[in-house]
Every structure is written in structure tokens, then in C-alpha cells.
Length: 143
Image 1 (cartoon, helix red, strand yellow):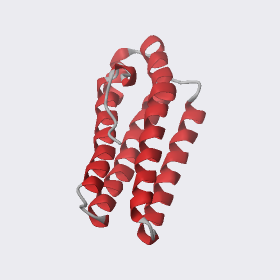
Image 2 (cartoon, helix red, strand yellow):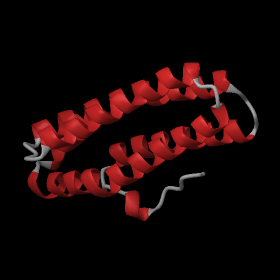
Image 3 (cartoon, one colour):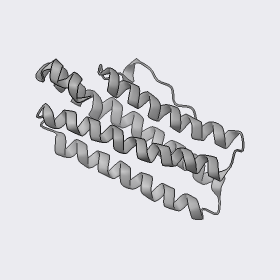
């Protein structure tokens, strides 16, 4: 499955949106690598990138939420932590998976669906709060 960027995913924060686009692009790279039969190593490398990049992205979002006193920071961070744990578990499972085709499909759907739902719900709400409640200069310096 290919995930497409559209206006329903825009938070209005160009840096966050750029990072989200990068994550979606990497999930799509897993799909393409799988379709092209590039194999386990290529997919594992992309999953490692996603894992590392989400840490960078989540850290930036959490810093922004903290500096803007976002009231849902602890819940939002919990969702981030759960996703990082999911990534860790998927990466571990990939190394020992006996049916890689089915597993890769599960990986793609798990990552893509989680990211879409998180952006459209949690991140859109967070960005709206920040846009209306936080000094824009502070926001730009943070992200």
C-alpha cells in the first residue's frame, strides 16, 4: 500500500509537516522495496531509518509542546513512546520472521495507519493549540 500526502495531514507547521512527509516517504520505500523484491536487508535498513527519524521527530514535537505548555503533552508523549516500542518490536520480529511477505505487509500497514491516524488526530490538535496559544517566534525557534 502506498500512503499519499494530502491536505488532511497538514498541521500548518512547515517543519513538522516536512518531517511527516519524510516518514510517509520512508514507509512507501518499504512498500516499493518489497514489491521490487529488494529483500530483507533493504527493508531493515529503511526500518532502522524510520526508527531513528521518529526519535528526532518526536523529540522536536515534544520540545515544542513543552515550550508552548501544551496541556496534552503527557498523553501525546505516551503515544510517541508506544510507537517507538512498536518499531522496536517490529524490528526484532523482522530478524526472525519465517513468512517475510506477510510480515512486511503487516509492517507497512501498522506504520502507515498509525502515522496517518496520529497526524490526523493528535498532531492536528496539538498544532492548532500551538498556533493559537503560543508565540510564533518561539515556535519557529523551537522547530
